[in-house]
Image 1 (cartoon, rainbow, N blue to C red):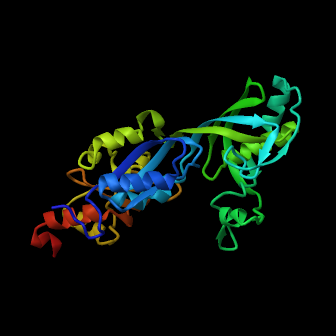
Image 2 (spheres, rainbow, N blue to C red):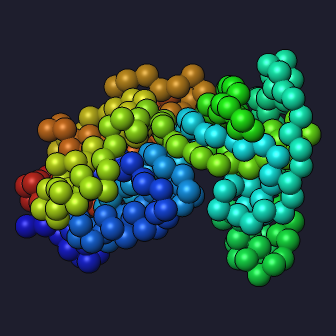
Image 3 (tube, rainbow, N blue to C red):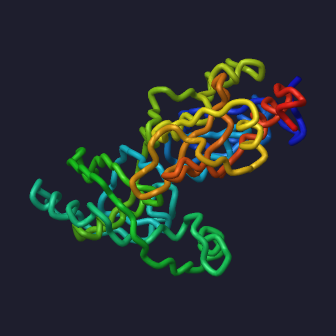
Length: 321
C-alpha cells in the first residue's frame, strides 16, 4: 500500500514539463501537486513567467537529487530587442531608457557577442531570486530599492547571435548553472551601444533532458491524477552519467541505514580517489547515491526513503539482524 507519511502520494520520479508563457514555475508546481496528489515536488531551476520551455520537476524521493541536477548545463533560444532597456531586463519590466539603434553588421555583432562567451563576470538582474542581506533581490526592487547585486562568474559555453529583423536579434545560448539570459541580453545591448532587453525566451535542454520529451499542461490535465505516474522518468534519470553499484541482502539493508560498506564496490573509482555513484539492489531498485573510494568503500550520501521501506520489508528477519 502506498506510504503517505509525508502527506503525499507514492509517486517518485522526474516529470518534464513544457511551461507555457504567463505561468510562474510555482504555478506549474502547484498544478502538478493537485494533479498527482504528491505534495513533495521540487525543480532544478525556475523559468520566468515570460519564458517557455523545459521545467524539470522532481517528485517524491527524486527531490533528494535536485542539488545534483541543478548543476546541469542548459540551452536556450531567445530574442533580444535593441534600443530599449527595462528594470527587469526583459519584456515584463518597466521601460527605463530608449536609445537609437546603430547600424549593425555581422562583424559588429560578433565583436559584441564575443565578450559574452567563456567564463565571464555577470551581474544578475535586479528582479531576480538572488539574495542581498538576507532578502530576495526582487523584493527589494519591487519596493523601489536597488539590491546592488555584484558581479559573479558564470560560464557561457557558446553564444550565437543573428539579426532577426528590425531591431531584434536571435540568440542561441549554451551555458552553465546560474547564468541569466536576461543579463546576457542587457549586456549585449550595452556592448552594441544602444541598450537592450530580452523579449522572448525558450529553454530547450537541461542536462540530458530535452523539451521535445516534455509534456504540456494540456497533456498533464488529460492524463489526470491517476495516470501521472506513467509520465514519470526514473528518479536517477538526471544522474545517469554516474556509474552504478549493485547491492543485495544485508549490504542493501546496511546501505539504507546509512552504514558505510567496506570493499563493496566492484567497479573502478575515479582517479582522483572518489566518485559519486548510483546504488541499486540486485533486482534493480534505485536505493540512493553514494561516494565510492578507490578502495571500494561505499559511503551512503542520499537514501531514497521509499526504496528503503521496500528493501527492509523484503528482507528476512535473519538478514535484518
